[in-house]
Image (cartoon, rainbow, N blue to C red; front, side, top):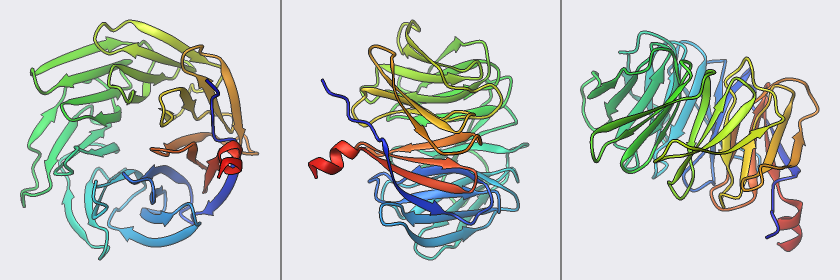
Length: 305
């Protein structure tokens, strides 16, 4: 099977947010959010290079954000220790949750977009009910012994990565916690689309594809650099490619089955490429590096189109 991967830089967004801490695509991949060290969240149509709206409500750098499934709300987490829920249309902050004792590194909606999960430097994950007027978490997961760096959510599972060198999977159907030890600080965790495996990045410049049920390592991906920063990794829309940012200004792309490096996206800088947002149905990728976001597409799919 011929692998189609993003290899052509199509658009560059000059975000004007100082450093862009994260870029996240909407559920339909039509829009993206950028999180700035200037305390703002911005909404874009990245495919047309259009800035749409800015959201303010944090007192410090915004590190992560996500749009709800219907694109009506945005949740964001910040170094000011708060989680904010915004209304997309009006730009108003609907809720501000202040229960964390440290920087909020990552935020995710559940599948129904009724609960926000936030992971923090305080070693906990907190769950917030967006339909309630209450400002206390409905659940606290405090099994981590160091900063929670990454969260993923499926219909019945929560996957977390932590600087304590472990990733944890909470199975909500059976009420069980599964813990796997990687060794170095975990910077990103992702479910494969078939739900059978987890992709885990850690600060030993290694990505590991782990069987979710047995904890067995199925493949290992190396060549990039990740020893200091929180660096995103992901799978493409077909579960055939592994993609990772790197501290050398590139994105590395591997074949999932053979673990062979097939391409690098060069950003023309040595600054870390720390945030990635893969398109949900096309060979398209958004990357954040310094103060800009780059939109990459497959030159092959452009020719086909």
